[in-house]
Image 1 (spheres, one colour):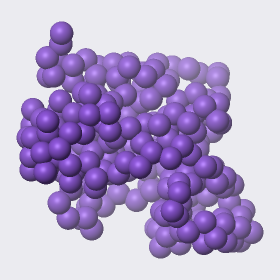
Image 2 (image 1 turned 180 degrees about the horizontal axis):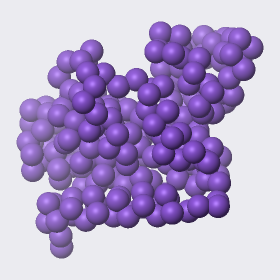
Image 3 (image 1 turned 90 degrees about the vertical axis):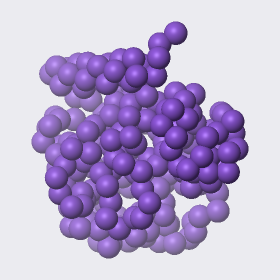
Image 4 (image 1 turned 45 degrees about the vertical axis):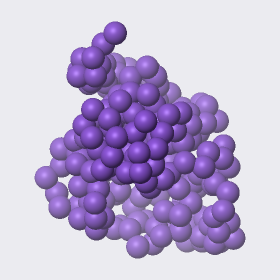
Length: 231
């Protein structure tokens, strides 16, 4: 059985191979899902949402983009550890890749529009689908150059129970009419898991088995993350 560090090195190597293979697929127009987030930590609901949308839209790949260290959020785990957990989570899925663009960025803050421009420039012939939560979509007019985002990608808003659906519907219609935005609202499987909940369980020494990939659970234990040791 591979030790965690060996598995992590294998995950990094395999991710590089997947990225290089995609760059070499010239002549074939790919449909790429883009899923950004803090991933503090990544959990099974993130992965299930990505897979559901990949399957629904027949996407060729989904690229996860862990955020750097956001100055507006307190207590966020080091970006490289969060990146490692996403890498470990995607090892066995050839359709899931991980970008280190924001993790390696030296900017104080990374904005969605800059990341989408980077992805668009890296893969100029591909069709981009930006996967976001409905809560984030409802705040989109506060984003930097938010109208430009609609020119760079189709937006897919993942709808979960408990959200203000009316507000989201109104915003989607406004964005479509004012900015010619291509936006879909998609109901995704309901998994009542959040990163906040995971961190709380770990802090209190409770089990997170089946809430996160087993390799993420092991990584959290080995590195004693989030102020506790899970059972």
